View 1 (tube, one colour):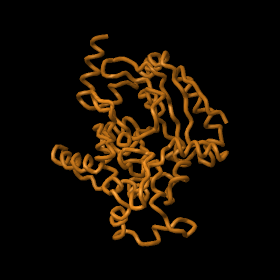
View 2 (cartoon, rainbow, N blue to C red; view 1 turned 90 degrees about the horizontal axis):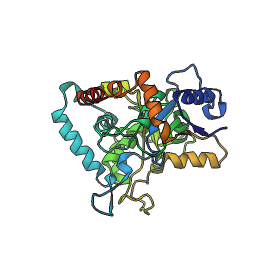
View 3 (cartoon, one colour; view 1 turned 60 degrees about the horizontal axis):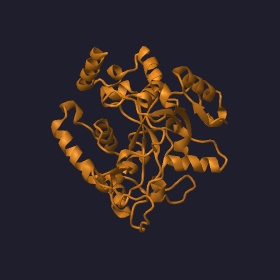
Amino acid sequence: MKTDYEIKSIKDAIRIIEELNCDNVFLGKIDKSSFPYGIFYRGQSNSEYSLTPSVFRNINLQGSSEYHSYALSEQEIFRNAQRKFRYSARESDRQLYELFDWLCVLQHYDIPTRLLDWTENIAVALYFAVSTDNTGRHCDKDAKLLILNARSLNSISGHEKSRNNLNTTDSFGVKLRTTMIISNTRESWRKLWVKDYDDIRWRDEQGGPLDESDFATPIAVLPNYLNQRMFLQSCLFTLHGGKLHNGLLDKKIDKSSLPLPISLEKINSEQIKMGKPPIIIEAIIPSIYKEKIARELSYLGIHPGTIRPELEYQASYFKRKLMT
């Protein structure tokens, strides 16, 4: 199957989707009449970026050659953000019962989380691939559109059968991965679940015991829409499991530690090595075509004024339009 695509216009993106709709290798046995369909899209302004959630990224400290990982402070970041949000949020926003819903809110405000943004709308993904920075400039690097077969990912990573093999916020695999935020060891992580799940939930389809390493992989999740932006952007997420220790993926860990995260790229490459269909298709957007595609999207009503409903973004978009 074809895996190397290039996008120079919206028409090219549509052509890719039409090809994939006819590609039974990539789509597998997906029922095209079913909903949700199970294909996730993501746009990245720099094709060199990895598919790594913000909490697992290494951040260069300003004025220093050292790097820091938010993963070292993940539990602290989550608890403090959660505490402050309860105070500042509107009354209607405070009733968030699932840890995953809290992650969605924190992601909305650019707080580092183990979520990676996707969308079910390819036009929205293209918007983020070609969007400008705060100064109105396009990144001078080639961009990338990523297309994920979410149900294939979940068939590899998931242990709980759900409708169309897509996880919702109350799914077993979602809950286990989100509680890794507030756990540092295998023992503390298991203690969170021993009261709520009997032994049968810790066994896979073959009857063997499940291990913590089974939850180091990412899974695709259909979130609850908690705000207008999530609705307008047709938000979807991959939730990434595992735990970083000292901010290093290659660090050896002892048996008491939670397993290291397994990336989407690793799962995809292993699928290909085994002669199986990839779970991710990539399309490069040459940097010289970013402005053209952004203009085409604007003709279709996809621009900052429709993607970001918050007042500060609306004001910024309005001011920029006045200057052009």
